[in-house]
Structures are given as C-alpha cells and as structure tokens.
Image (cartoon, rainbow, N blue to C red; front, top):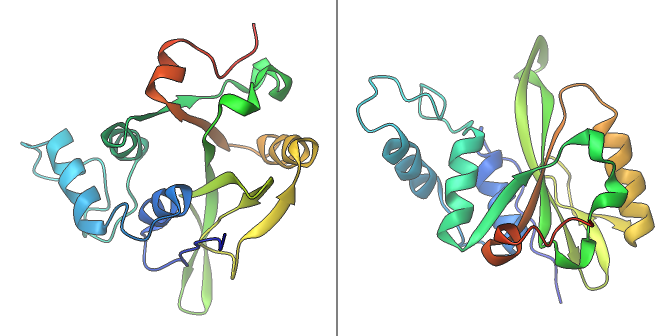
Length: 177
C-alpha cells in the first residue's frame, strides 16, 4: 500500500493532518474546515476557530468536530499517565499539536504558532505524516513509536490527541486499566 502524504500549503496543516491521518486526499478540504469553524461560532464577527484572514490555522475544536463527522473521536492525552497506559491496538492514530516557528519568506520571526500533524500505523509500521516533511517518515514498531512520542511530549507546549473510533472512546478501550 502506498502512503498518502500531503505537503504543507499556507496555514492548512489541520486539513493536511486529517487527510494524512485518513490516507485520503478527499477526506477534508479547506472549505469543509471553514464550514465546521462557522458552525462552531455562527454569530461571531471574527471566527475564533481559524485565522481571521481565512488562511486556515484551525483550532482543536475544528479538528475534533471534523473527526466526529467520520465517527472518530480525539481524546486528549494526559502526559502524566505515561505512554505505557495506551492500548495501541485500539488506537487509529495520533494527532500532535506542536509549536512551530513562523517564517515570512526568508525571515524567521520569533513567534510560534500551533502546527498539527498525524502519526499513524500503516503496513505494520508507524509513520510521522507531518506535512512539513518532504515525505512520510517511518518511525518503526510500537517500541520506536513510544520513544518518538516520549521525545515529543518532553518538549514544551506539545499536545497529543489519541484518535479512536467513537465506540472505543465511549468505552475507554484506548487505555489500559
């Protein structure tokens, strides 16, 4: 199976993350996430769920609502639990939110903005499907995944969402008791 991987355009990392997660170029479009953000705040003069210029940069509420449309849920992972608490066989994938540098043409600005990317098991290996990468990065087996996520979670302000089917979320089957 070929691995589908969208590359970063504008501030559309949430669109790329969802399409990479579902391995489907047609899973979501900018128009889809714009519609979700407007549905979340229909009366807002300035929509709080996306960039005010309409360039993307969608927040977690938009990502979570988009997942629900496909019968999946995002469960925020509490770093204090430890990754050994995850039941990896029940998990569809992961969505990471990591602060990223802002670049204006050739100049790096000392501002950070949130960047979304997906991690998912495909063909018996886990892959980093970050749209800022030129191609998917093979992480490896479960042990390597835990090392990768441990390193990510040690960074300041990194958040991890565990992506599971709705029934798995409802019954908390994604975590070990």
